[in-house]
Length: 537
Image 1 (cartoon, helix red, strand yellow):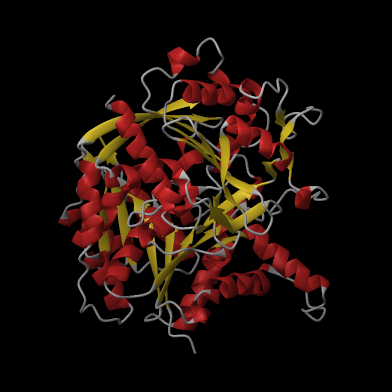
Image 2 (image 1 turned 90 degrees about the vertical axis):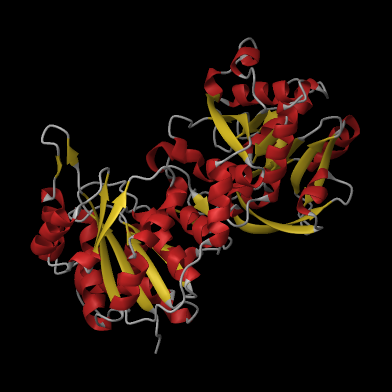
């Protein structure tokens, strides 16, 4: 019998209150107290995963070591806890229904009518407990996407009601995150939205054990007493979550509010070990008190929604703190770039990052940005599509292969320097079929990559269909673009570098996915270091 305890985090009043950050902060505090903790996200949409969702719809699609395309909140979980997540940490309604329908098709329900209760809720409960049954975790925190009252969230709330009753109060609890807005006209905080949200949750048969109240003003004892009275929660279990300067302040704020103590007492777990957060606060101190400032241009196709590049901007924060440097990001839409305006648009930058993406829109702008970085010796990092753009730019402007391209953009290009991977050629379905997850990469000994990683074999996460075309490897190498990292089994080029450039690196993988607060990614650390050196010239 598993002794794992379960914490459910629900949200009310409005979306985007920060359930993921509260869940990650609580997990961090529990981890600091010596408990093994993981977090999972239950997403109410019917897509199987966010892999086919437009970044404008959903923000970044985060990828795990085992190749799961997941919600961007899993990135926060990994960055806070410094431990990898997996396929089991993200579940969508689509995946739940798909599993139940597959069982029905196989005749596993023995002719019974398949219904939301018990069949869908049983599948949800099974998914929630998968991580607990591994016996690897003392505590599993489950964040339920959306807000209480959403039609699509109802089966999840019902599954929580059933599980809480089955497991007992000392083995499961519910944290409800809600909004206590400040009305300037009235000059006071209002509790009614929270009261209605809790009422709606209770109508579904779930009573919150702890209320976490998002607010822009401090909540006084009178408001806590009022919330306690109307929401059936004792005052010690009403936690203030005031707006913070940065998400990395939240664990300290929750420590001050004693959220971890309240949780452990309710779960009948010892509170002997006190969280120190020493390494965390060392990072925070460097992040908030930088000695230098640099500006990096992020060239992307989805820059209107910054969440589309969430892991990259967070990796800048981690590596920036490591270099005691504040990284300012200049968001540049690749569609706005053209040969004639590139010098003006990229003027004054200390580094250029060409971001991942899909499709032909804005591609020429990315290529122009790569050329500007190459010719002006500005530190350059190309990630996934960004690396491919670097290969195309070099092929066109150095090798004089004027129509060089990726067959993703031009199927009839005479010089397909970026080609569709052999394993992708017969694939029809788009969802979950790319080259995904962690793959090994062997580094050349005298390369910049080897110096950065300080090892010969690395493992990085991927998400792509197209690859460097090895037919052009010799030409590119002779002209000064070196392949310094390759997959040891397939020979697929993973890293390119320029010989006559202070810092020019393109990687086929996504290093940003593995950067955490306590382990900033070495590639980002070195890139920012190079940008800092360039800024002082």
